[in-house]
Image 1: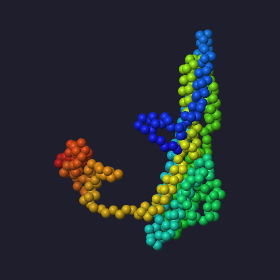
Image 2: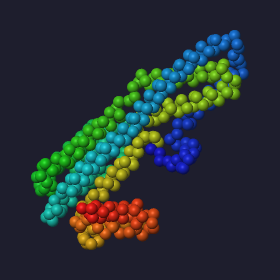
Image 3: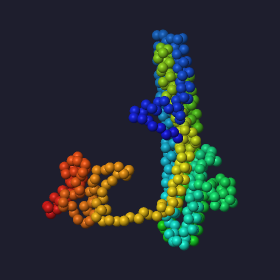
Length: 387
């Protein structure tokens, strides 16, 4: 899939050729305009044929309206297929990563089990990498399309051979993951009660359901009768447009009209062709290669020791109860506190709320009454005095 920057006004998109449908549309629009220009010199509509010309124009307008509807329907269906395909793959990724994260978190913290836990985690990471790779291959037009995976060293060759010969690789790997979970629960590597462990199984099952819905898009093409009708209507329109335009308009306007109409109608048709099969490797297809790369990075991240050890937190009540705000990128922020601060120590705010702002009278929490700290504290104090 092509990434692009439209710029402030969007004019930068005009000159992009990669992933564009303009070249193919131009190849049809330019000859059509040339034909209309030449016919305009020889075909001259006279007053004697005015009624015939009007009837031809009415029929042409009705035909064009039907063509516009057919193209709109096809392009709308194509975009929905493209968007739903990407959504389902991302949902599959999310469900399976949640399951993987849960299984990593459920492993035993016992020092005696450390070696077994690490072996299980590395085996699971490789199986999950293979699982998502096989899922992408399952929806791809090329079932053997190569994707990056975490090295399969350590998995016995007989199992890998069986997997390579299987027609249902996703289902096989899914069964390996679930079966290894059960076996490691029995060995103590996953010392988690079954009701809690069921969460991981549910997430795995929801992921495969989303993948099956994505397969629906991959295996059920846009209906042939619609596709056939739309292309035949476009060809008829392409052939008749120069003739009718040269009858109704002068040769220059006929050429311009044919170019614009034919160009954009075929653009819409080519857009639909690009989007209705979203799992390929063309520029306008979904970025499946990058999705697999990102998946491998996410899987490998959870193997780090630090990822499995929550950070130590040294609580200092006077400091942390202030809930001071800072910026995520470390840049300067207007010093202020959250409005809930005054309630954290069990006392109502009776001294005018949080700390005054250091960013001027217009800042949030300033003494002008509009700030969240000063205004909120004053109202609490007023209610206290009334009581």
